[in-house]
Length: 628
Image (cartoon, rainbow, N blue to C red; front, side, top):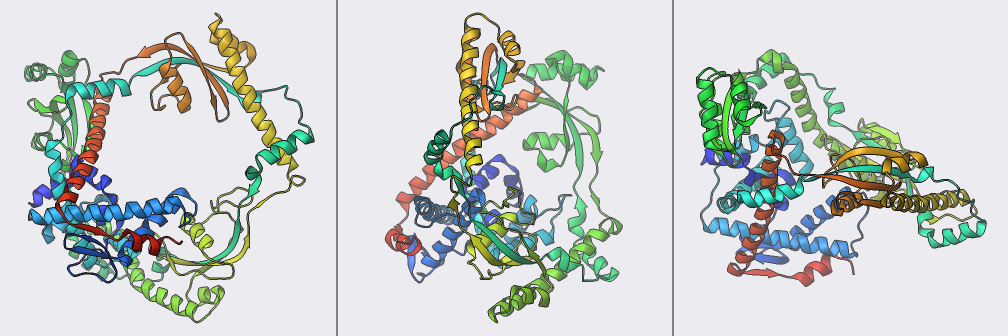
């Protein structure tokens, strides 16, 4: 069971499940204090025999609102349609999660304490740069989310049960080679085109606007001249790293900690693997035969498929997703070449270029990191007490200056900034946790001090909002120069698009794009490689769309954010089949399986809704959580 779980956490299906059901998994988004045997106070959601209170739904809803505000960089009005949609999605996620739990329980799916511990230790979220479980990172995660270790483990156990249940979808998901090829050929087809760029700033001969024209423009686009709200604040901070520097750590403490965590200092065996992939088993056997007769792996590969082997880098056994490839690669002797191995990509021959055996880091290697870790743990223990002292001081009515001085915090007076964290000079404020600081400042009323806000490193801060400058539309007479600048920019943009059409028309009448571009003084580029996502040559999406619709020899033009572009299609390049493209096929296959898994997961949820009893008090939830 344990080995199956280990493999599951490394498989594509587990990655897909973790990505798809973000709200489902405690190990990435925090434990849900949801559910329980008996009926909760103010029960608003019931799924089979599990109930959820209004308070529990409210906590999950607020988490999602906060996440969206951090992602968008703006505030969300709880009376807006966006907030209503978030609430509906929150309830839907709660129901879906519970349906999967009920189904898993019905099938008798279980997860042992050992399997949970192993799985958590394997999560990169809690590992250091050497891939070793880092208890400081784990403790920091728990603190940020207000969880005890017991609460986390309990939630993680439920997540693993759910993951095992959903993992059964993997067996039904395959993509046939013809379908994969058709999608791949469409997605990775390229266009070779000539491009001329016309920048708006280079457009000349635009007459100076009259005051009447500017006033008309100002009145038409008045909201564009609205200054944002600015806030001036004082912030008092205490970082975990700063606090840790006051603690000394003895040699005895470090050695004792080293012995207690000796298992965490074992580094797995790593091997540098090179491989060659063949389309058929026959080709792979031919190459293997050549190698057996004295031909080098590189030469044999070149003779059969025209390409040398490629390195997949230094990897652990668990880094190789194909189980048979992993087993073979880690059983080979140094420089030996395997027999042909089949995978979804074809037939592989692999060889081991170097081996780094499993080892345990010595005390001297980890002494300094351990010293820092222990001092950080001491700081973490004390920082809770300091938070309580700060809360008591705030409740007693002390000023932010007094609170800061009494508790060893750093006090900073910041220059005014807007909700994007920009000063009046359009410079980003210089402080850690910028987004969180800005959100807190804009949630705190004038002359008030915020509550304690925890930082990602385990520290915390408080903010006092000193002054608020509300947004306003600036009068025309004061910002006439800004209006003139915006008007001129817009006119030049129109001029650039007009010039692009003019050039396109001339080229369509027989002139070359290069000749016309150079004559008129615009930037010309020959033979640009363009793919459907614009990764080869960075061009705007409208241009990509236009050039992919064009026939060879046809000219297109589009407006861009800073002017316009003219393009002439020279050649259509089909998707390739080299080793780089093999990796792209593998990535595409995974992405498509991801998409299929989403559909199947949604269908499964729909089917479970018919099996289990669901009761949601939508009216009470909305009336309580969305202001009327």
